[in-house]
Image 1: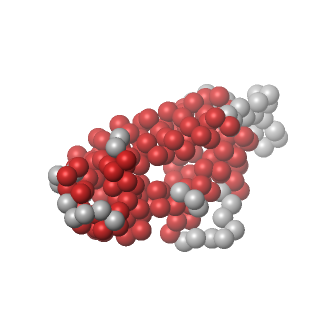
Image 2: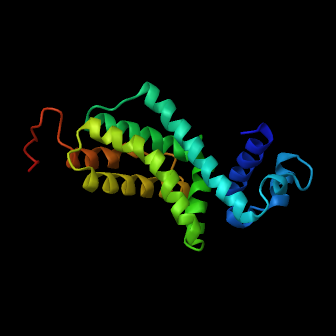
Image 3: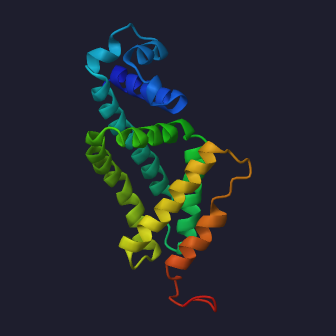
Length: 195
């Protein structure tokens, strides 16, 4: 990816995260990036082409974040999985807030642009692969059941924190019990409250 193209896409992501999908125009991207008018249009001839490229760039950046975390953390127990997911939630609502807001803006836009849905499913599948590996290693014996429950909870916690920031945001308080209820403990024995 050329440096200029990458700059344009990262600027577009920032605009999406800060202003929403209606703030994403070629002219706004050029101005925010400090480039001559027409620069974004040279790379992305239409707004749809720009949005399609943004989807790929968001996924690439999220995958990079996942790979960095993967290099240092590999949860092998339900408790460790909950801790990693809580750490990701803090990143998504803190240092990566703008990136996360851009992703949610694209998800909402997909409701009005069905052609985006297939692209989102494809790029989301690449990021989702990390999560499924973590779940498998942490002990999930039913990924088809466990993955959507945990990811939907995570997504809701993140979205709520983005919409109504709480300085005492503690995703582990909810993710910990949920993951523990779904995944068997490392020794395979549940406590007195388990089934």
